[in-house]
Length: 151
Image (cartoon, rainbow, N blue to C red; front, side, top):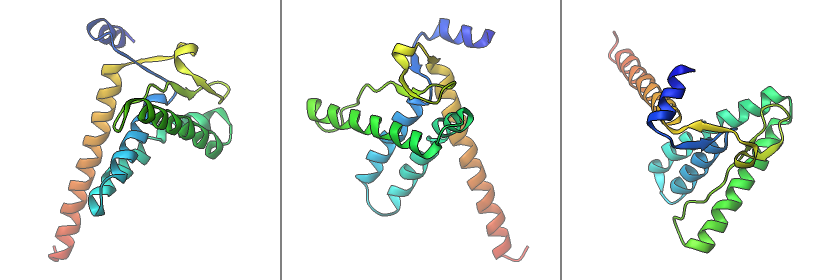
């Protein structure tokens, strides 16, 4: 907890909690992926889907219907993207703070609810996750390559 306070003192930027940030990143990656074709599309869609793990886990821990809750959250964020594009044009980034209340499992506006996460912690978490996935893929390539050679 002390390091989190230190991080907030040095970098005061905050992001909405409750899976709102992860869902927003997921929606952004999906939208970017759908603009691409072929194999370039795959990583965007895969990481976008992986980002939904946090909202899905929150819903599961609350005991609510995971599919229904995550679908509703995705719809709220999707509507925010569509509204932002109508108002500000293609590529506009929406402000959508909807997330999951970790106690009741209901969708709430995290700004009104007062749930915030430090920007620096969130960025480091995402970086670590991506680096771990890349490392696993590299190890998998090495192992599968050695099997092909007969070692």
